[in-house]
Amino acid sequence: MTIPQQPGERPVTSPGGTFPATGPRDVLGLAAQPPDGGAFDAHHPPAAELISDCVHCGFCLPTCPTYVLWGEEMDSPRGRIYLMKEGLEGEPLSDSMVTHFDRCLGCMSCVTACPSGVRYDRLIEDTRQQVERRHRRGPRERALRAAIFALFPYPRRLRLLRGPLRAYQASGLRRLVARTGLLPRLAPTLAALESLAPRLGSPARLPARMPAVGPRRAVVGMLTGCVQSAFFPEVNAATARVLAAEGCDVVILPDRQGCCGALSVHNGREEEARRFARRTLDAFAAAGVDFFVVNAAGCGSTLKEYGDLLRDDARYAALAADFAGKVRDLSELLDELGPVATRHPLPVTVAYHDACHLAHAQGVRAQPRRLLRDIPGLELREIADPEICCGSAGIWNVLHPGPAAELGDRKARTVLATGARLLVTANPGCLMQVAASVTRAGGDIALAHTAQVLDASLRARPVEELL
Image (cartoon, rainbow, N blue to C red; front, side):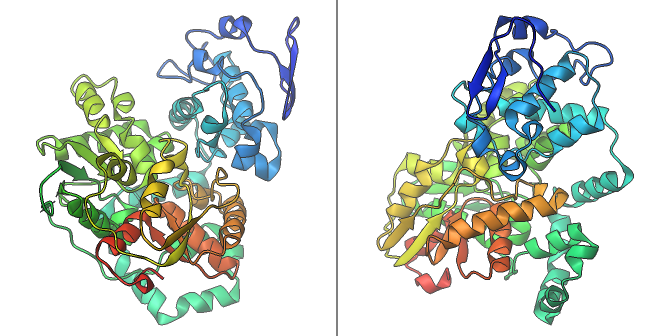
């Protein structure tokens, strides 16, 4: 698709090609309310003033995973922004338009790269809730999405899978299925889910509250999450121990928690996301926390935007905005408080992978690196092309298993090229995606969450436990 040039516009040459200049006529040409019959209705459409911020410079192109994969303009951030502009001007929400919106991973690498400060994160989020309300997908995709959202946001339902999954892994069937090579050809979505499933250990039961070790410095609420609590309970246990060791009373309330709404927000399921957000707010309303800590990057970015998500809710708007201001990633809070617990040596080489929703959506990059470098004996190595997503992106790797595998394989090559013995990141989706990609590449590297590395150092555990 070619972006047309309007009469009298001066073309702009950019790293990605030549496009029409933007300016006042773009702002004036976008209706305050979408016209009847257009792609969007009046309920929070992508904002005209945000669209007009894009000057088509092309700096987003080399950081966009789908543009890197396909080189297709409409699968770049500025191309999608142009489609949003068309939708505001009256173009219908066609299957083709939806396809390009759906292909966006929502990694927000373009937000980091953009010199004009375009709020692509807000634009794609508002566009996706329009798509989910106004576009009817095909029967197969509707069924797949219904199954995903009937399972993934519900920790108790996910935990029911632990028994059968552990039995499957222990029986040797997994190796047999892999040797046949039939599953990816016959059922690519099922193959993607099977390859992503982590090896499960023993579940860890968390108390409602964990007291601080030594003088109390803060009262901290902690999100247990959905996938994190079901498949990575050891990460939550390590997170609570680290917070307590650093002088925090940790309020967990595992029986009151559910999904925070991140998965729903990132896929345009607005009302469902609001329901989950209200439940989270209710669970911690009387807990008296100073901060609310998250150890999953995608969840953290959504929790920090609760004020936007519930801005139309008269009962919850103020509470949501106040709560959002208390949200911190684990590394963010530990860096803010400063260390008091003794770090013991961990002699290991570590490659740190920036989870997209931590680095790009939350701007948290330096803090986890500082925490890791403070561990005696640990050597930190950087990964090439860190801005390119690993292909996980919530459920994107399930909805688009082929392209996700390509991105994962690219990430696996750069990770293995570091020569590190341990890959550390701060998101369960990244852990599963990179582990599957490293296995496909025939590589050998252990994986851990930042919390687990800190916990091992604080408890003077042998580094072999991480490897």
